[in-house]
Length: 318
Image (cartoon, rainbow, N blue to C red; front, side, top):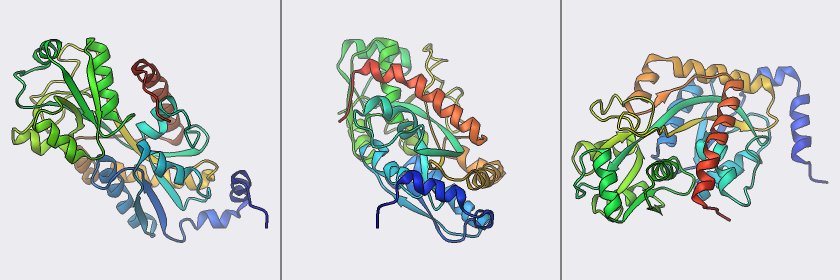
């Protein structure tokens, strides 16, 4: 038999009888998280998928497919049948930045994914090695002008990498980027002053900051984090910078509107829940509710916003 093209699969899905779409989901759904277990996206994705399974009466099974800056996992989503039974965790990397970073991106972020719903914005916490004699952002900038400084991230194109690159560009600092394969290794090197600063998700670094093993200087989002009310934003520290990661739910391109709309309504109802909102906020994130069209517009705006930052770094990945 001849192979059926992905476009043909999409047309078949569109032609599927309405009753089949109304019955969705009639079997378990795979949810691809293109990062390691325990990361901010994984935690948020699991929180929503657990409730989505309860709401829609089917299992939403988490699959962690980490690697290549989210490209490995999101390629699985892009190439899946557009029938709603494979979903993915949308992020700033796969759906906004990687198109400017990778020479050979294995998917088209505009056409190979169908927006479903946002979950949350994830500001980072700027933390430094406790050995550095700086108590605020201005003192750190002064220190970095006199001393070699490296910043860590979990990979090129991650929100941590982008935040560090944006900070370096805004301050004129020459900071070396060091990419890690795990948050744990990066945290260890920061505590031991092998890298001097990290722009890390609040949930991943909160306990270390509270224990004094790293020193928080600023929040990268629009407002202070409830978990660290005494830590100013970068804007309050005098830098015109807002750098926020984000996560949402997407489906393969061509997934029928009836399915993505049902998922959008269900996810939004979950995010509106006071209990879920409290859990998202406790983890240092900001709940975000959107229509499918609003999510598409948000991702397009993020792609345009980060393009000059990525290009200014001169970094490309094969």
